Length: 317
Image (cartoon, rainbow, N blue to C red; front, side, top):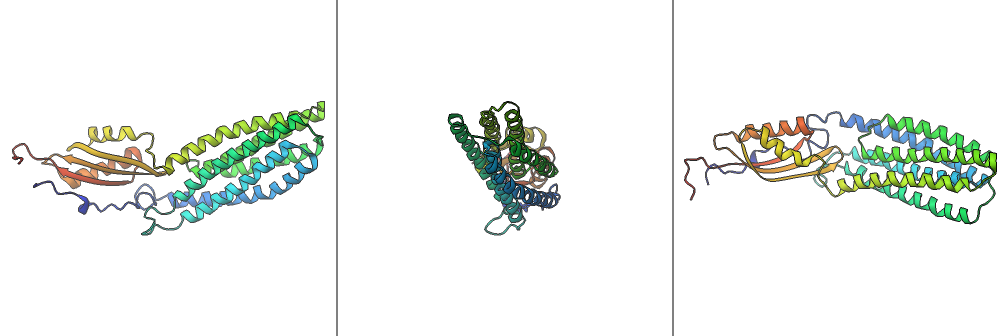
């Protein structure tokens, strides 16, 4: 039918432009990623070095709180190392096999980090249960010194990571790991003080369980967010987009298909099929839609299929 030619051939927008920092509005992305990479690398080195000292301190003192914190630091080191590797991989350019690049590697790592947080929390609860049944002797003095040193290291690592991009799920996962370590160090200090003052060794597993519950809560949020992106779920504001476009784009008549999904936490992709008024310019409307998506929703990647509706005086056979 005349006037109904599809617009794909005139759509010069490539899918990987908006998600790899090549489209306008995303030119800062490589700089942020480089900052993330350096900060995560430094945090991994500090965490790995102190983890060795904390394992020794936990074994010498016999403290579950210290050993739990050391085990958490071990997963922190692994998580930070994986995050650093993910940022390294994400720097690779897009190609024919991976048109959106390698940014989603960091989402996968964030999901794995969430699972490891779950595993650590469950291990702590299991060990605490056995300590309740059979409390052992704890050297509260060495336990206190190591816990204080651990708190200092965790505060330094936390400060380093808080200077990175907090919207990045990989950074968010790393921060949650370190925050769990901070809580673990505080719990170990509190348990050591209680044992020194009262001799009540059960304080050690009790405070360990409280830390484990906080870790579980943080882990669930991270797993939920990263799984949503891995399954290419729509962003929270997706329902607003069609209404906004229909209300603000002149000449846009009817949206027949609109799909919105997340590639990463900062890359959203839109494909849309719609009809426009017969006296409107398809290219002008496409330009207006892209501007609206970029300015109002920070969406740089849109594939648009627009066709003209028949004019009122056109006979439809």
